[in-house]
Amino acid sequence: MPKSNLLAVTSITPDHFDINQLSHQRFKVYTAKQLDQIPQLQQLSAEQRFEMQVVASVLPFRVNQYVIDELIDWQQVPTDPMFQLTFPQRGMLKPEHYQRVADAMRNELGAADLKALISEVRAELNPHPAGQLEHNIPKLDGEVVEGLQHKYRETVLFFPSSGQVCHSYCTFCFRWAQFVGDKDLKIAARESNQLQDYLRAHPEVTDVLVTGGDPMVMKTRNLRAYLEPLLSDEFAHVRTIRIGTKALTFWPQRFVSDDDAEDLLALFAEIQAAGKHLALMAHYNHWKELEPEVAREAIRRVRQTGAQIRAQGPLLAHINDDASVWARLWQTQVELGIIPYYMFVERDTGARHYFEVPLVKAWEIYRDAMQQVSGIARTARGPSMSSHPGKVEVQGVTEINGEKVIALRMIQGRNPDWVQRPFFAKYDDQATWLNHLQPAFGEERFFFDE
Ligand SMILES: *Cc1c(COP(=O)(O)O)cnc(C)c1O
Ligand code: SF4
Image (cartoon, rainbow, N blue to C red; front, top):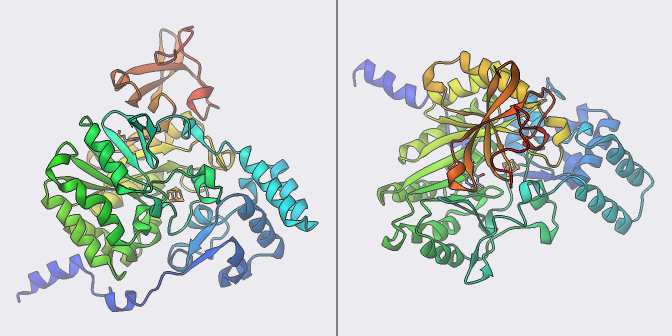
């Protein structure tokens, strides 16, 4: 083989990459009860470990060995972004909540009382932002269809019941309430049949978004049971299947060395071969998630099936509120064949006060990051809020007739006629969500307000 060919091959799979070594890696996870068993945590003080226990009793905690060993830089703890992304920090609870739970744990309050206190605190953390439980729940023949959400005309969200955990949990997760074990907080599907019945009755739906939790925690045979039926002629109106996942970050072995990884890739190829578009909606927060060789191998394998990977994730204080982090994230994604899709605004739930970034500052970071990359990497929509009326993008700050305003655009709307409408809010450099904003120009309400 000529030398140039060899070089071409090694540039696809670098020679230091040893798949056999990876295939020995088994999935091992730690939850709040096993915090003390994580060797790396011994470098922290007893007080810091207690603080983690307190926070982890309220907010979900789950982290796996790969994240601990390969993603976190323990020399940089506690400021390391991957540590902040997965490990509880005292500031994630408001001082009064922290005090109440910490006192209860120090005084060894009885199990039942502690449980009641924790439920009370959770209920004060707005567990269901944007009315997730009351709204968007579809019905079929007058009966509620569980495990589905249908907010925007063309896209149905599907929450398969066996995909409602993740390989690790993000400390800022907006779906945290699903993970803390309260049964009535869960929205999960029982049957693939319900999805099919619903789609049969709704020919306007072109996109099915399988989400969670993380559907990639499912065995391939379970995922296949949901997706394969959608490839038949009666679902010809379903053009795109999206899978929301953070497995490319938290457990790339899912696509590389897990027992059913090959079968998973075969399923992806099958969906593409049936003429549908398959998109992995990959959740990324930091370029560090793209560095391990196994993460890059997973991306290569997914791309080889013809599936596309689109990247989205929130802008967060303590993790990625820095333009150069986003510029490097987008540029690296492009080089690996991933399309930047959304920059989200952290939702009004859970540990939001710890992570939130004012909308104006978020836009400044977005703009600064955009200016550092070429047009190819400028495909991510600006800071976007998934609010009750729809997805609202912050387009920027400007001045109109002497009034300083924030320009916004509705990119997705519960009313299809709202989509792509621009609108304006009074300038406010503290606002962190749509409900903090007032209409500009002395108007009484935004166009979407009743
Ligand atoms: C973002 C979102 C979608 C998909 O919107 P696109 O603009 O098509 O990506 C669908 N449903 C819900 C509830 C969403 O938040
Ligand atoms: S991967 Fe997504 S659903 Fe899972 S914990 Fe993180 S933000 Fe939440």
